[in-house]
Image 1 (tube, helix red, strand yellow):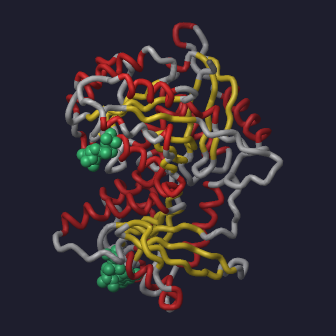
Image 2: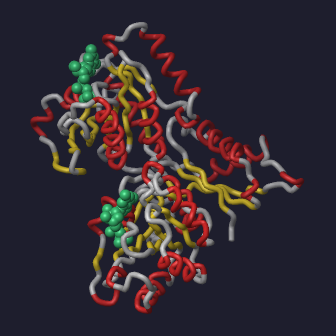
Image 3: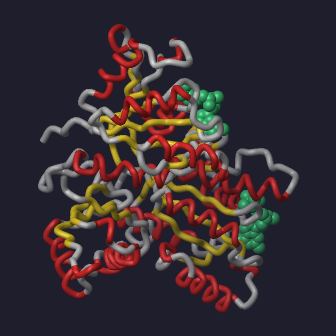
Length: 457
Ligand code: GDP
Ligand code: GDP
């Protein structure tokens, strides 16, 4: 079955607000597919984009830079009109640090007259910057702005949330009875694995232990990013004797160690961010001599927000004191803390002695399988009916909120859309109930699950 064309998302905005940066972030590794088409379309770039599993064609309307800065000239308008024709959504980017300019307002007025749904993006908002700019842009009358940092990759989950209702129903759908190339990935494909954690947790020791001499045989493969390398190696699964390929990203190992501790802590988060771009499964390494710390939770959260499968391993088990109370303490901190950490696999390992490493890798493969699983339609519908029966949506003001059906739009991570009416009145607690029930009842206990509510047009 041929794939349907991807939904089109056009990036619009005045020069220098960060359109190209956003485009590059969305298109990411697929940048090679970007086509700088000469001639008619030379002012636009196209690229296949993936946003936490949501697929679309991103269109960067570069080339406006040539125009006079303070007006929306005819040629630019014509170009944009062409871009918007057939587009499913427009991302209107403003610079939150600079605030609104007359040109932003002019583009905004013009966009309001167009038929395409608009998501307002307040860019350059990293680390809570640009607050006043974010407030200002409510005045555009284009709804709630989504603060992001295209450069630093912040706000991506919010952008996903804003975009999913607009293009979820236009995702390429595979025939259920055909080979599902993405939904059920080849279990023999290399597992993309990253090991992250605070400085001194033992990442380098672990990686060296895992790779052993193989590292010398295969050698590092250059550049996932400037600061990290990927290493291919083979692991023999003791459960069935099968040889399984693993591609391991080594973010920290190759970087020169900084001197100041504080800086190292920040680097740990930056490393995790990069690892997440690359990995299917992320192992967060804890240090048994230190336990679970705030920084660990920060990293865990980041991994899950980006929709990657996460597991935790307590390293240095060989020197752990009160081992079982340490383990139970971490386990209950995970289960009682953030809802999304409930059920995340936790193991004890020693990079020094090798203890627990086979279990860790086995669990990582299992986790990828869960993360990649598509629920058969019949089972999904059965779950939905049961969830509606046993805890129906509330009826604020006496009018019942109707949820009609559910569909799984993506895997990796498993992503669902529930269609219904009067969704604005649906309490967040009810959405949480649905997410928890999906995780519990449909076998996604340990992986992040995305749920979006949507009204049919
Ligand atoms: P375009 O002209 O709209 O395509 O903008 P560019 O993508 O070329 O970005 C313009 C400038 O803004 C560049 O110097 C970028 O590095 C910078 N920039 C882009 N995104 C961000 C961001 O999220 N934060 C900050 N601080 N700067 C950004
Ligand atoms: P990284 O900063 O996370 O890469 O940590 P390193 O791999 O450099 O390890 C930091 C320190 O912890 C080193 O002194 C290691 O020898 C030690 N270490 C790492 N793993 C273990 C382990 O399993 N047991 C013990 N006892 N020490 C370990």
